[in-house]
Length: 216
Image (cartoon, rainbow, N blue to C red; front, top):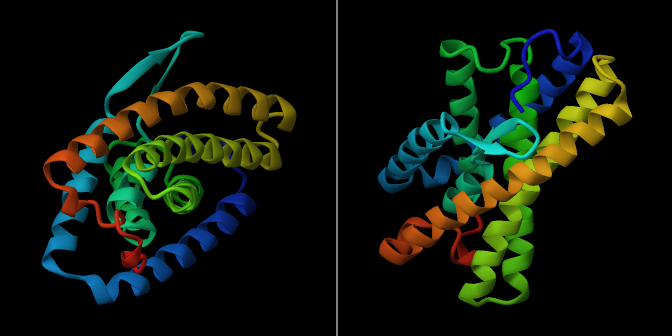
């Protein structure tokens, strides 16, 4: 999922980078009013947790592996704006320190995972939970939002690789999306398990649980 340098052309890297910069700038502006100690602390903890979880790979059929992306987890815990910032910080650290994802492609990776990955997860979560405001639907919303965010992000990666001419578009779409439909199941299981645990011991830390807090 982390695009290395050389896999997207300069035009795609610049275009996604501009959108990413705008999205993160808007997110920072949106959360200025909620920069309280509790929110900052949870953002720091979530960034560390997601970073650690992304280092753990799980095997999937076909001889490949996947790992948690964390976009849905961040979005559900913190809301889309703070969640996008958390995932962006994780991606920046990975790119500059661990060389996981290219520096030129950083804007594309933020575009896929921190902007559209986080906001799509939150939108799905919000819509499903709004249909039926019970605990069961809350967990279903968490699981499906987690799965969808991974699949959607992989779809964007495939489009970017196809536009850049790295691989043939239809081949890339099929390969990326099908594999990440399976990886998304792991994402859904891990994210739902974490949210269930937090909901049981400290439900107040899930800032989006009440939709009266949509400003997050």
